[in-house]
Structure formats: C-alpha cells, structure tokens
Image 1 (tube, rainbow over the protein chains, first blue to last red):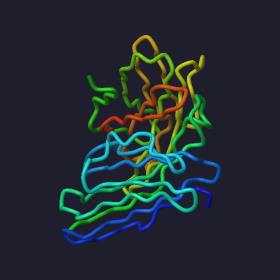
Image 2: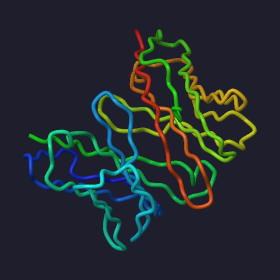
Image 3: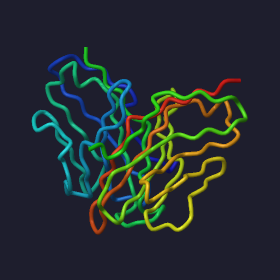
Image 4: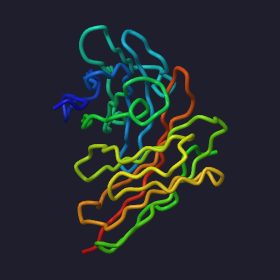
Amino acid sequence: NAGVMQNPRHLVRRRGQEARLRCSPMKGHSHVYWYRQLPEEGLKFMVYLQKENIIDESGMPKERFSAEFPKEGPSILRIQQVVRGDSAAYFCASSRQVTSGRETDTQYFGPGTRLTVL
Amino acid sequence: AQKITQTQPGMFVQEKEAVTLDCTYDTSDPSYGLFWYKQPSSGEMIFLIYQGSYDQQNATEGRYSLNFQKARKSANLVISASQLGDSAMYFCAMREGWGGYQKVTFGIGTKLQVIP
C-alpha cells in the first residue's frame, strides 16, 4: 500500500497525558499537512511541513501542540497535557510538490487518527 | 468572508439519478486549485476530482464531473448515476497561492444520502 499511513488509528488518553500521532507520506511526497476534524465539522488546517522545516503553523494552537517532519522517519504531531477538547480526528495529508496541476497539487489523505481524551 | 461555501447541509438523491453538490469559493489569487473529497462513514478522506484555475475544460473522473464556472466562482460537483455507496459527506476545498506554498481550505461539507 503506497498511500499515506497514519498510526495509531485510535488513541485514548487521559487528561494531562501526551498524545503522539505519526504520519508517513506517500512515496515521492515531501510535503505533509496536518488537519483536525471535530465531530460534524469540516477539516481545519493545523500545520504544513517539509522535511526538517515547518512552513506554516498558523492553524496550530500556540501551546501544547507541536509538529515535526525529520529528515528520516515519519512526521509527528505531538499534543502535550491533552484536554477533553482535543478529542477529534486528526488527518495527515501529503503532496508531491508545490506547483499547479492535478498530480502535484492534490493532497492525499491518510485514514486519520481518532483521539479520545477521557 | 468564507473561502469555501457549501450551502447544502444535506441532500437526498434517488439511486441511479444524478445529483449536484454546490460549492462557491472566494479568492483574489489568479492561481488556485479546487478539489472535492468524499468522506464515508468509515471516516477516511477520499480524493475525487481536481480543477485548476487555468484549466480550460471541466474536470471529469468517471461518474464525477466538476462544473467549473470561473466568473461565478463556483465549482459544483456532479455525480451521475448515483449508487448507494455514494452516501457520504462531500467536502469542497481550495488551494490558493503558488510558487512555494500550498494551503488548502475546506468547506463544511454536504451530507449526501442515496435512496434505493
């Protein structure tokens, strides 16, 4: 399966714990995006990364949330000291590069990680 | 102003009929891309169709077509010959800007239910 991989698919945490969400982009894709989807809502952009660089984190809360995309390994979205309001589906997407056109423009999504905070 | 507007929270369509899901967008950028994604009850986001702002022809992908009216800033999705498996949430999205950055904004979605 050459698609975007996310793990875990489901994650349960108690308030105050840390949540780590992983995303491996599609082969040949060097751009990663994280989105959050609250129940019955659309996707909200959180952060856009390239290898070892955060390009835009304007959608990510300033506190407790961080993201990285190291030179080797998957992209990680980290939520420290989780609260109930963090319960949501977190989607990762990847794209080939940033130019116009169907093949390069399109973001392909992983299956998502559903985070539940007790 | 909303970047992406989907005014139909829910739609019903008879199996084998065609259905149009509305989407309007707002941008002053001459270069942009428009997308439709399907999210079935299982939760994954499935890419359906793409339209670039400079594309001369409307995009088509099998039973999906995008009715792109640039002057009206609309990008409606047309699903022909609906099937029960088409029941899902459908999201319209737009990518703005070029030359180094790709940020995508999603609409709130339309829930489509196909009736047997």
